[in-house]
Figure: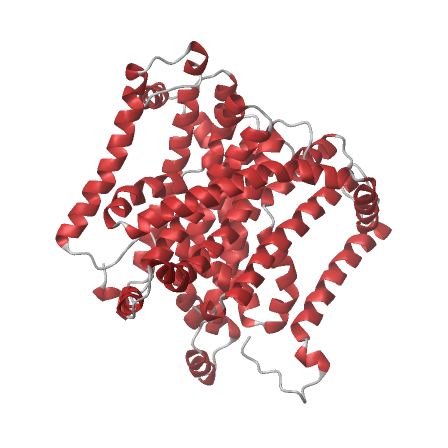
Length: 283
Length: 263
């Protein structure tokens, strides 16, 4: 099954970052080294301009962590960040909500029906392999330079991880459970509600996590090429004016947005998988 | 698929999936074409499959398409090769030396999680719109899957196997050829599959921004010119390449590492 491969590889790329079973000292050591390397990198970056003289030309492209921090602080203190951030965030959330609203039911449907699966498979494979960015110029023609094209590009970016993971989770549902519920007279809707979706939840959550990354990417590129306002627009304009610190500040805000959303999904996951017996022992 | 294809099962049942898939694709294109029998056709807004096919064939034989693809292929090759070399080496060290792993894991995670595409305007301003700027964007986007997957592959190597080879008097060469490379390679190839998609994004971003030729530039320009049939033809070309690359790697994985199937 081709999709299962994609799913596992995608999950592996995220989940292999966590190595289980560390002792207390090892955990301390890993935190120490991990935080240490980040601090060292920032320090080196900060003092490089003091150690070597940078030519005036290169200086235009150079910034330091303190300048980036200062820029971020000013943007939040003066409130100039809120408007572009609001524009970006609304595009992001609308697209993501749409992707969930379409991807989840469609994933359940093609997971439950072999015929539908076979009919949708060529489209899913083709669109999932293609970088959705190719459609951006087309979407700009169709939906204009505003919110519309941004929402659609976020939507098609986030749709496939959710769709494929939901499908995969539904396919892995225990047949016995489905048959039991059916024997008690459950309709297909009941089967989905009581057995299939709760069982697929870990897959759906993993898909959601991937989708957040894709959605942020969608917002960034949509604003780079086809928008009038938003964080991405701010960054492109800043790059044109050699305000490198602003570009990095924008990058940090985008990264923070994606991390905050991922943390939210993590909370959701913990809440939704509380009933799972094997989950109680962990964490 | 779990269903066993026993010889007595009819052709239609055996190839049900392929037949249904082909059927739905055919229906899709026929419906697309047929819609304009009833709806007025506006070539500035949408195209028709027959026009797209005509443009595709025309651009293919005039050499325009191949030229643009070649122009885009060069930075892709540079950036992707650099990503393989750097990513695999960093990944091996991160996987092999525990403390290096501790030190680099959070840092790399931060980079991997942040939308590095956002640095594209800066890279373009700094390195220009030529091959180097695009290659660097592609490198930045595609290096991290290699790092993480290689590190995971090295960590997953069974220490017992290493000890066995050593006990049996195997040399370092045996160790590498018989244990380490076969163990890590599937992970690297799986990383390559993810990296290809990200690399293609890199090309498109680089060329949408500023370029004078290349497939991404062609798509953006035909969009600006409202030449939708040509634009769809270029999109079709990218789709074909993306599917061939990803499915090709997937096929190679299945052929070369059959023991990985189902893992």
